[in-house]
Amino acid sequence: MSARHANKPPRIGDAPAFRRFMIGFVLVIGALFVLAPLLVIFTQAFSLGVGHFTATIAHPDTRHAIYLTVMTALIAVPLNTAFGIAAAWAITKFDFWGRRFLLIVIEIPFSISPIVAGVAYLFVYGLQGLFGPALQSAEIKVLFALPGIVLASMFVTAPFVARELIPLMQAQGRDLEEAATSLGASGWRTFLSVTLPNIRWALLYGVVLCNARVMGEFGAVSVVSGKIRGQTNTLPLHIELLYHDYNTVGAFAAASILALLALVTIVAKLALERRGAGRAGRPALAGPATIAQGKTS
Amino acid sequence: MPGLPLSLGITLFYVALIVLLPLGALVFKAASLGFEDYWRIISSDRAVASYRVTVLCALGATAANVVFGMSLAWVLVRYEFPGKRFVDAIVDLPFALPTAVAGIALTALFAQNGWLGSLLAQFGVQVVYTPLGIMVAMFFTSMPFMVRTVQPVLEDLDPALEEAGQSLGGTDWQIFGRVILPLLTPALLAGSSLTFARSLGEFGAIIFIAGNRPMSTEITALLAFIRLEEYNYAGAAAIASVLLITAFVMLALTNYLQARALRYTARN
Image 1: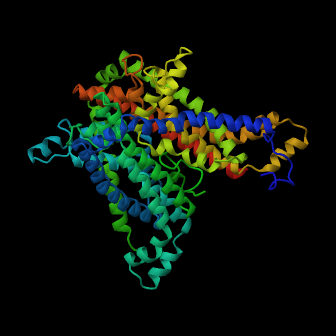
Image 2: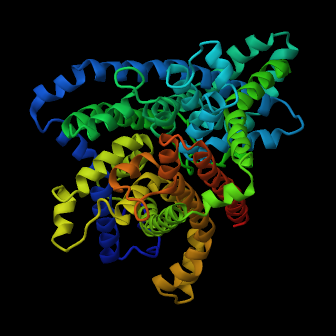
Image 3: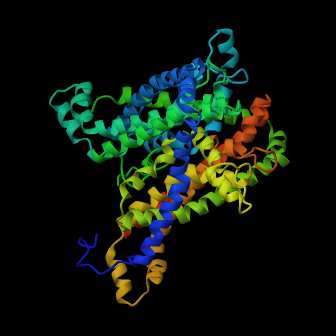
């Protein structure tokens, strides 16, 4: 650092004592509030030994919760990805009335408490809701079953892929696609061989973040799932159930799987950012209203 | 260019079915209550107590994040130190970690017999099952907002501004207070509104650490959830609509502040 700035005057706050104080302050608070919770998860998970840990993971209820969480992600993430691509294509390649309004609507789920999302879904598909009675007489189960869990997950993650693609595709403009179509390429051909190669890392970035959120969603899913043990409990809900059963170590064992997923997500995120995905300077995993500006940094 | 009917069709269908339909159903349900019933539910003592604890804790968490987020952004932008890349990466952990996992981890950490809880107990401070615990959970889950909003503004800051201040004989604190802080203010405001809005809606991390006693440590999102479990759908709809309206107000505020922050940085 000193070599790089050797010919520059010291900037403010470069006094060694102040510098050491600031770094110390940040590291201590960071260690206490971010690193310590992470360590607690793994320490607690193995506090009764590896045997208890594997017994929790191997328990049929835990295995079913993992299965349900993976199933939810396998349905919700591809649908969300298709939506994100479609929304980005429509919004960046065409001008139409209400475009800016559509941008804002796509970002709404970021601002809304997951509990509100869950309650809202109850008033659509629940017995108290719009379609509830009709669904019941047709014997279609949406709430307290996989479809409800998937729908609620799709609500909370609706903006995830779109918000990565829109600013990027806006910055890339329409020239390449226009050239391709004027040379006779079909729309699909243009998308697959012109657009997709340019957006693949941003797309993957959005998919990774979307997946992390789907697998970890708690509030919205806890309203619509009914929390039936071994049937409609996703992994985050199963953690709550174990915790309230006074099986704290079991809860942390299940939680350690999701903590591992979070760490993998962060590593994947870093790797993709190195390839240019994700824009610096805005919250990466949640947060409203950056694409509504229609600008890239 | 081809593909407008298909792409716009998918987009509108998805937005209508996944986002607008449920929100519309909630508003419809709340509106069908009639003003008197609606007002009685949302102004009940227990509901008002939940607004108070939610808003006050969110304000506390936001204040803590202003101080810590700005410090962290400053350290990450201005200083080199071993492990800096690791610190920069781990800042995103609160967003990547599922809220329920964060909730039980923070509770274990700050419990009377936990690593930090036992330490704080010696000073007579109890975090779990108090509003302080709610604040800790909100602080954790919203932390990346402030850092990631302030960081790019600090990076783009022109060193010439500081040099001008130095050549005029200003002390470091004077230059920080009169030159840098005003330039950071739009980003700090935008980061604060994001932090505050997220804290108001947070559920998963809080319910484990809060104790959830009505009138003292029960947040508004939990009250809506409890009304549902009591099969009091009118109550749930009304309370949830309060959260929804607050979210829209915060969304408008955040949009305004971010647009202003963007203009501000663009001009400078």
